[in-house]
Image (tube, rainbow, N blue to C red):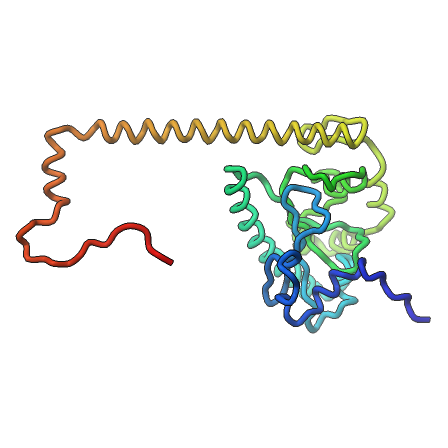
Length: 275
């Protein structure tokens, strides 16, 4: 008996991964791509910055092998690791892009997480790359929050998954089972706890308000740190300038100023280069 076709929205990542030319995707979806992966914007971001790195479907792997993390880890070990390393390389590129945007918009950088969900409703393997804040209007349900909590156990950090390959074979075999009965309770059981301070909150609205307070405090700290650094730099610059005495200045200027009668007619090069 044939399997019922997947709902279009659940298989959308598979359709992206199947495209010979990812640039046919609109810029509102596609961030970047490489020979092995493509990165898309998460349509329902759970942090200020949230992207998905997706392996492209290429031989020797088929869509079935890349259905989810469990399917990939059932493949030959060296092939599975190669896919993960490709995802890691692309995720590091995405991390640099996020950090550049952080500096532009917020004037400071904060941590970025990379990881998988052991159980996913979407039908193609995808690596989450998101800023460490979980501060988003799209964060509405407890199961969503718990699925990204960095230490609860449902969010599998990429570095931890990669470490399985270097473990003893029995440990590797145990970890790659990704038993749903082990992970599903993590989404609904227990209290809502702040991932930063471990404070227990009574509801999602209270948690979201608390996370906003935590992010505001982080912003204040980082701005104060930047201001202290700026002041130290100004003091250091002033000290250097003050150390140059009036007697020293003419000699330095004489060495740095071209002679008026040296016969040279070359123009000095300066200013910003034009791209």
